[in-house]
Length: 470
Image (cartoon, rainbow, N blue to C red; front, side):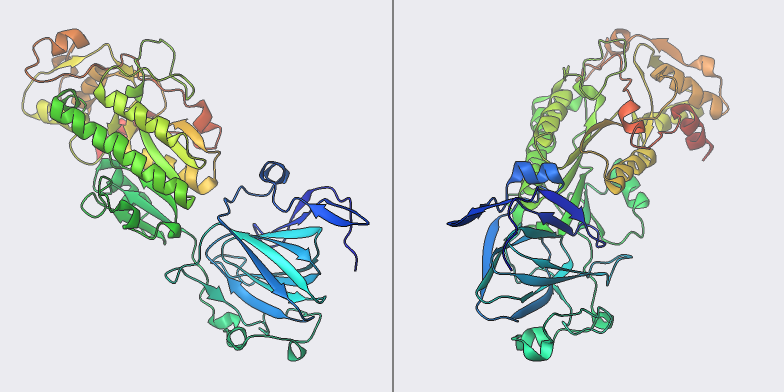
């Protein structure tokens, strides 16, 4: 069978999710032929994933009927015939509703296939001196998880062109288990870093009972450790949510605080970003309204340039810039976070109960963000495969001020809201005895981009009422 010349590059989805067949242009004449076996720009534009190959392998088979498989590896591969012709059979061996689904096709130099992680692949040569190449995006490791299926499995019922009784097969391939005995390959895992903080605890609750989600506290995974690269088998992770951060805004203005803030919010983030880039991990990074100066009267959008006023904001902006260079990332920018533990709402409630009449800033505008809503929004972006990039994620509704929030707390706890006195930021910090960080006066973030993904943030005022009623 001769190779077909002059095809247009075309990618077709098979019944197995992510298993993609590609027709490849082959240019030939009396001298032979030429093709671009992998051309990143053209092929990704046609619909193939930019899977980041790191190794090119060649399998040569001198006899018709040589049969290999069925092997499912923990990496993606791009299989293309160099010479000859093969029959391929692919079986989905991943956890999920398509486990056991089968697809078969013939491949020649003008037809290739992208095989996603966990899909079993097998090949039978149909011509002598057949060679096929496969690009893979990971290196073989004895610690990796591999899954196998018997070539003669009755459930898969693959119709081999040449009977398996009459072909060359290795004893190892003949010994693979039937489908009923196969342990499906799990998806790549999710790791939550900083799992004991306010957001970390909310993420624990959000992912409670979800298989494949792991949590690490600072004691269990120190982002500043020189051993971070070997702390996990990072290729097994598909997503890392970094809930670890230095958030002592005022202390960041001191020499020790400045060092600690840069260590956690920049150097730690850079270490995670390096690991994410090397292992094709989606990194979820939490940003802050403090990256803006708050001088604009309009809500800040994701594309507004950063203009941090203090050290904390500078470190967050630097971390954002690092993460933005990753192909797979979500920068989730939030503000005025309230969660389990010490926070402004609890402080105001305590003052009300103790008979203390506070002075609270009334010239800073924003919206509250509750950590359970923040965790829910993060999971939404990851689970729905929203386009990578930066998203503002806060509560919705009318902007408010810290003084208004304090009065709401007093009211809901049965105290007179008139006990709260509104003061300017300058007045509030005029008599401060410790370091004070400059604050953005307008912390309102535009939510349109997030809402376009299908996630509707809850009204901050209603969430505050619910929080206080608990």
